[in-house]
Amino acid sequence: MTEKDPLTSFEKSLASLRPRRPRLDRDRLMFLAGQTSVDYRPAYRLSVFRPAVVSALVAAVVTLGVITATKLATRISNSLTATAAPGESRDVQPATVAGNPVQRHPDTGNALGWIASLLAGGETKDANAERPEPNLVQLREQLLEENAGYEKSQSEEP
Amino acid sequence: MTRISQELLAKLLDEQAPALVLYARQWCDMPEDVVQEAFISLLRQSRKVDNPVGWLYRVVRNGAINASRKASRRSRHERSAAHQGEPWFESRNGQRLDAERLVVALDELPIDQRETVVARLWGNLAWEEIAQLTETSSTTAYRRFQTALAFLRERFSTS
Image (cartoon, rainbow over all chains, first blue to last red; front, side):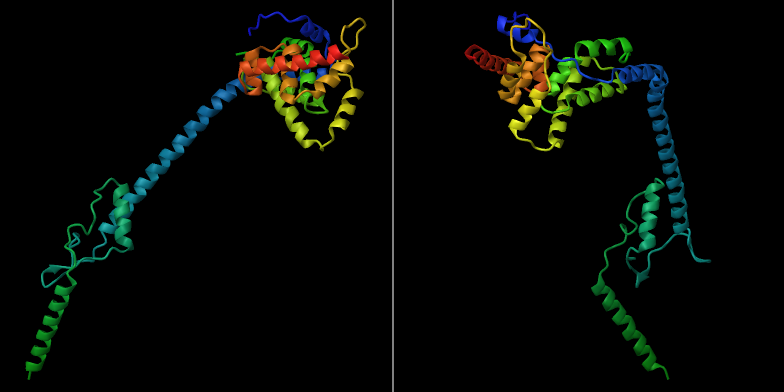
């Protein structure tokens, strides 16, 4: 089976029959061919130029978005870490009870500050990572002791 | 990069359009519309088509199959009658085979054999092109062709 195998006589007889000439709109096709040949070059340039322009615009928008988000996150992070009452230290000290640190449960502001610091390129360590796990039993006992001491002092007053 | 010029289009219309219409006729009753649309699609291609003939046959095949699906279902008898009303081949004096008998015989072939015969004998497509067109191997295309020829030869020898 090759392309050069000669047609048999029967195949030649079949092939000698010519398909009927179709009734195509030849004029319209030739007009379209001429029209597309005239518009070809500008379309070709545009088809090459357009993706480059679109890609550049998308890259610019994405870059501006990232820069804006980073600046915004920095502002948020700074505002959250700098919200100290007058007279208090800017360093946020963990609350303590009888010398034992009390864990601040993460609230909205704390989580937002973590995200903001992440975007701003800050350290991502957990704000509560250095704080010891709460020992609620010890805390209860300490509160009871303090309360008992307070009541005793109250009862001893004249 | 070049696209379809008017000269190339004229050549394609003269040499390939009749065979393309015959090829599309294997599926649908309006093959000229399908072929017309195929040429329009070719002209609207934004990129160069390396093999316009093979491309046209693929597009015509897909268009004809879609057209046949859209058309209302008709019985095989009605379809054959419609075929006889519109000649498939030019009638010329002295031709050895009866064109009308050939149409009836072709219509009795399975579609895969029929399209292979049409693509090979009148489209002059290569076996590899037919294989790509019908999504088979060239060996399968050749086997279908030979099977179809054997049937046609028997039909014309017994008549």
